[in-house]
Image (cartoon, rainbow, N blue to C red; front, top):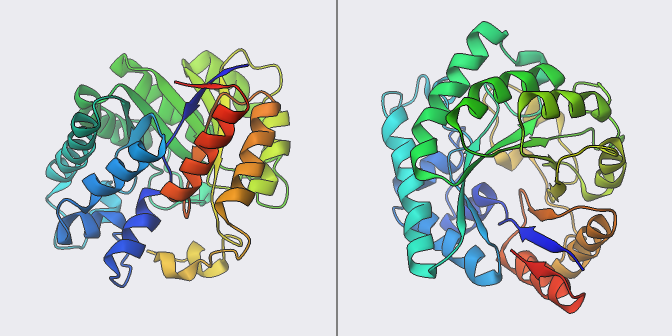
Length: 298
């Protein structure tokens, strides 16, 4: 049997559900401000469920996301808060690793809006530099194009931490990134760019098998963590979207999601967990399934 790293689930959606506030374009960043300590509690619940990684609540903390908001000048402080909350949960739990989340610039799922390299690399590097001192690794999430992959690795790998590259794929054709490029074209970029692992994230569970097949032959550890949305709606691709433009699918129970995850493990995935709408109950079910199958969670 294999050693499996069990990631946590979707921080942003879990915060929205627990806080009960109307979502804003600042997403989980706003809730971190309005409800101090709630992020720590979510991290703690994921650890208690069996996750061995706490992913910092920093995905959407970019200058472009904060521009025009009351927290436009709080870029550094917000990253420090995200780190503090994750580290506080780990300290209480007594074990686990901290993964510094670096989300896409401008918007998720919009490779057409990714800036040119001369703009993107310094912006990603600024985030990586703030996160690295408090993390065990960096996880570059929802990477939707080959250019995006190349730029974010150029910015994060120089920190010296392991960098996990997480690609997001077309929900109806998992063999392609959201840019339309084949997933396989990101593999040499990941290997030559210094990634320590290559993952598929924030896509429908059904798209994951084809995406993992696109990673075939990679020398890197691979894995996946899907979301629980019906699909990425047109409304969510507008300027400054809010998460209430997305709809939770009705068949996203912990048991059914764990069925998907175990099939990925059978295909060679050694890093698994969940993205948006995956809560502690989903992670607990996955942990139980992994142990029952004889795997070791690391």
